[in-house]
Length: 478
View 1 (tube, one colour):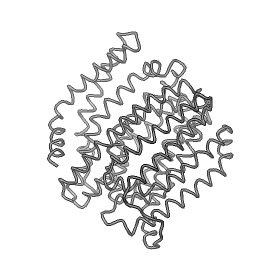
View 2 (cartoon, one colour):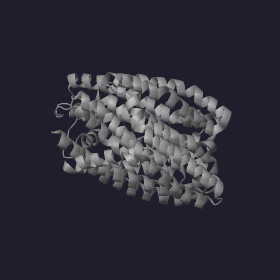
View 3 (tube, helix red, strand yellow):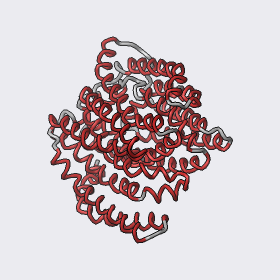
View 4 (cartoon, helix red, strand yellow):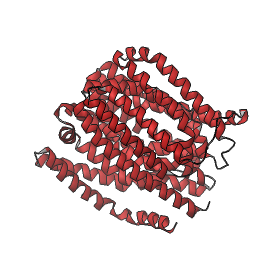
């Protein structure tokens, strides 16, 4: 495949993925607003406990081997049957472990009512194992249009079930059934659209190679889950179920920029980086360019969420959710850093550095746990959010920069690409704070502050238009 053809495929995949992410996030925000008025905060806390368990095992459910299908530049026919077997077997085994261990975990979290919810949501692990290969083939072939159809069907079906059950008073069970219905609907569409069908098979040589590459990634995924979810455990155990509900709402809202902007790029970044890794110069430049373009759109979204956290929570979710604003601003900053770190994860994975990724995330989790507990003791859910940011910025970002050195990626070059978005973000904060000091109405603060700060941001980043137009022209020519 020529560079121009690759750019054309990547461009099309990113467009489809961007549309998918934007629509999904907008719909999810509206859905969360509705459910926040139908389900009490303590029920969100019960669901959060069940979600912790599900995400733990989902992070390792296919042992990281599906990423090998995305990364390889060789034909996948010999590899895919073994990947199918490993994914199905691990997903089923982990589902059984969840069913058996649910009472112990829910009691440990002092939320025994979460036991049944955990057991129901474990069905998602079997579905994830069955769809690991079709999902990897979609990503490998840049068929984000197919993923759009699957995600849309999943959202429509899952939302309908959740709203009906919430109106009937099922509380946390509404969200659990939503997750199962979403996974089933997505699986049906994925199998229908994926032409590549692989039955389970076993090749010992392939299995050893797959596990050698995949197990460190699976370990990293488990650690990533720990990094992104251990705060729920800390908040739930030290502060209680109600603060956990507030924290869950804040974290989900703060993750919006990651889902809306990072997800479309990440859906193709592993495959795209892998295609150019044989060209050292192109491989080096690809990360900086991708990070710069991501920052351009992520920074204003994060700044608006952070600077307008309190009025946004009060206007959109209602007064009873106001305590969530205490953590939102710092969690949004964490979300902005995550965009860069997740892109770095894909860059190192494409280079085959799965062990380096594992070490970084082991350090991340080890440093995070004690600081989260300290933050919770000192300043509640806001202290937990501050601890997250400190570790990500001061420890993990430098660790990634060290891992990038063999490929010629330097902090100075990355900083130059991020300078204008950063300065634009600082100006946006100043504008929003000025508007909030002059205007009393919360809705007016959101409208006026959001509009004026975005205009200020455009003025700062306007000189970057030449780079953006150059990328667009290349894609149009492709």
